[in-house]
Amino acid sequence: MSRTRDHQVGLPARRAATNLLDAVLQKKQPLDDVLGRAQDGGYMFDLPARDRALARAIVGTSLRRRGQLDAVLNSFLERGLPAKAGTLYPILLSGAAQLLFMNVPAHAALDLAVRLAQWDPKAKRYDKLVNAVLRRVADKGTEILSKLNAPRVNTPDWLWDRWVRAWGKERALEIAASHLVEAPLDLTVKSDPEGWAERLEGRVLPSGSVRLLPKGRIEELPGFSEGGWWVQDVAASLPAKMLGDLAGKRVADLCAAPGGKTAQLLLAGATVVAVDSSPTRLKLLEQNLKRLGLAAETIQADAATWQPEERFDAILLDAPCSSTGTIRRHPDIPYLKSDKDIAELAGLQARLLDNAVSLLKPGGTLVYSTCSLEPEEGEAQVAALMARNPAIRIDPLRPDEPFGDTEWAQASGILRTFPFQFQLDSPEWSGMDGFFAARLTREG
Image 1: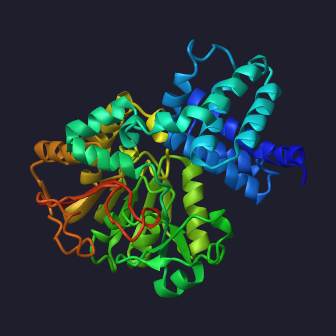
Image 2: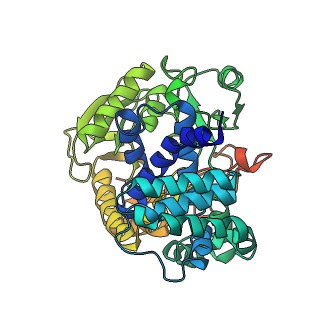
């Protein structure tokens, strides 16, 4: 195959990556939403699997390493980026990512980046700038990278300042370093974890989850269509387990979509009422349960105000949050969320908690959880709830409950995990979502 033809083959994947980055960074759209639309009937629909994977890899690398890439690019953009230049910034960002972190040959990365600029009516006047800047990136970029603190520079200031205040500089660096490696894929299996681990070339975790390295579309993995498992990070599987023995109990799963925790509750023997305010997300939950061969009562309602006739033995409230504990999986989060979002979400979480308490039978158990690293969405929420409602107290997590890992069970009795924890034999196999969970009981 000729060099020109080889470059042309790689163009659709680069164009898709540029469009995805433009949607996330310049239009502030969640990557999962944009990627879903692009693959289900948009500009990635007809791409071969190899090109889809390449586009996702370019986007993931560009977002994880954005701070470093910006530092290199800014060294060669004396006047900064021109205004109203279309996709110029995503073209430069993704081009630098390929040159510095993806081992793409310089001639290929430069040629394709220039072609992308020429294809965009707003960016085409800057095609020579693209060529000149990326040539300098290829020549000098590695030297600039060597002088940067990667975990720090790839973390936006607003998040870095939060984590230093909450957890200290050393732990903030550990959190930030964990985000530079793509997360493995954890599956909760209905049965036979050893068999599924062998079939999927994964490994069984102490929790019974099966961990594997990402490899193509999840829907195409063995066992998906037959409902043998569902995707759920090992940390996300812990809150439902904190409810204990659920056989014969009536349980509410509030903010339940997409349904992983609902499935856990059902397999534990509970009768489950799954509540979510979004009809679209509730439909997804119903589809997921149908695939798994499970059934729950589903209700579209605002969990902050919903008042059924009968109270519940147990409630799981996995509340909407900033999701900063999932940045390994969602590297767009630092560029879509802000301090303002966290303040607004904290207000919603307080309303959800107050209503959840009102739905609980005396002596019942409520587990509140968020996939957030922010204390306002975890520890502070529980402290404020108990100050408002003296009947609520923490039912402390026993040190041996989270699979014997005493580090996750805090002295106060709550669960707190960090993305740098759960280290296995290599970075690619290691880590977990950052999660908060508290088990609460209602007296009288």
